[in-house]
Every structure is written in C-alpha cells, then in structure tokens.
Image (cartoon, rainbow, N blue to C red; front, side, top):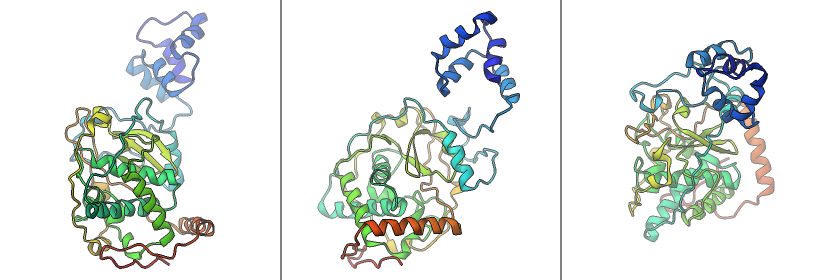
Length: 346
C-alpha cells in the first residue's frame, strides 16, 4: 500500500487527479495484483520515491530475493553477501517460496538422445543413475527426471564438460568445486538400496532415450528448498518439483539456441573408490555468477545439501519406510564400477 500511495503522489510524470486514481491503477495493472502488475505500477516512479516507499512499508521483508542490480557483471573473485546470515531450513523455505518464478523464462529443452557405443552408454548410464539416486532418491519420478535433465542440459552447454560422467563428477578431484555434492561428501561410501537404485536407473535410461521434463526446460542449476544459496539471484528461477528448485542462465545463455555443445562420444574414467572418500567441499567459495552477454560464467555447486539434524533423519527414515512398504525390493543389486554387485545400505 505504501508503494501504491507513493506511486500516485511521487511519480516522475504528472499523476492522475485524486478522484481518477483508481482508473489509473486499473489501466496500468489491468486489474491484477500480481508481482508483475506491481512492478508495472512502480516503473513510472522515481528511484528515490521507490526507496522511500520501501522504507516506510510497515510489512516490509528484507529483499532477499530477485536479481540484484549489477550482479550480471559482478566481480567473480568476490562472493556476494545477501546480508541475511545463517538460515534454518524452515526460514529458507519461506524465503524461497517468496521468490517468484521468472515470467517467460521457462524455455523448452530439446530431447537428449545418447549417441555413442554400447560401452560408453553403460558408463554414462551409471553416472547419470548415480546423480539421480544420490541427489533425489526419494523424489517423485518427475522430480528424479528433472535432476537427470539438468545433467543432460549441462552436457550440451558449452560451459560444462561434453560427457555425462564429466558433468556429474566435474570438480570432484578438488576439495572446493564438486558440482554434485555426493561426489565429494562421502555419500558413495555407504552402498545403495537396490530397489531405489533400480528406480533411479529407469529414470536415467529414459532421459538418455530422449525424455524431456517440460517443467524445468533448459535449467542448468537447482538446489534444495531448505537452503538459500548466495548464487540464486544470479540465475532465473523457472520452477520447483518436490524439494528441488530449478534455475536457468539469465539472458541468451539460457535460451535453447545456446545449447550447442556436441557430445564428446566417450566418457572419462571415474575412480569411484577415490570419490567415495569424504573431502569436505567448500561450496561457499565456489562462484556461479553469469553475465548477460555469456562471458565470465562459472558453474555452481549443485545439490545444496546440509548436515541433517536428528529431526531430519527421523523424517527421512519415515519416508524411506513408506517407500519400502510400497515398493518390493528387487533380488538383484546394481553393478559397481568393477562389475561386482554393490552392498545395500543399512
């Protein structure tokens, strides 16, 4: 209400007569009270008037969302500070829910159909299955498919490796740069639950055969809704499936036409024994700023996981119990990298 009142009294252009104010608002907003309508109404205000309105807004929340002015060309050697300090999961969820989905930013992704030998496909399938399993084992089928699509979108993005395993394990050889946190936090050391692995494998197979999740389009980033990464204002929010919020690059780098990288045709060797050892990634120092012209972009750490609390563990175990009650456990365990079946997790 403060913004609306100030818009009418302090507009940079002559305002309407007081008795015609409602007509002016109706004309500008089209009768809508949406975020876009409010932005349209405030667009004619002087910047100082907008700042004054925000200062006197009795219900104002800290502006912890949206794209920060100047960030498209921010100094990538400096990690920006949103000024909100540490957040618990509930507060992060509240803020993430307030961040609007960017209008018009969801663009369709082309199907990814794997082109390579049977041996390379087997490697790619294992890496993609690992990403789906460790990042979204208890998500819905669509939620798992969305994670797989982010991986394959990155394979076609010139800013990332041109292979599936290369994308999944990018940065895993360092202690500060794992793109997917499971590749350096020790998650792979505990084995897998066979039925959940097989479910993730089916999702990965479909993704490699060209399945597309329209709800995430060209997304190349995501994080869990119980964290608020400092890099999220630098990219465009396109949707949420389950606990994961998905983003695409801002501007032309996030358009379908930008995904022109050709698959390398071969997959790198992955030393799973090495990457199963925890190496404590420092996600806070990994830069993910994107420029509008496509230059100087650096990738983000994905996953956005944090150390679980006792309550988190109890909720996860209860959800796992319900999954297992509904899903019969297959007799066969998945093959490990060396061809031996992996031990199921307790």
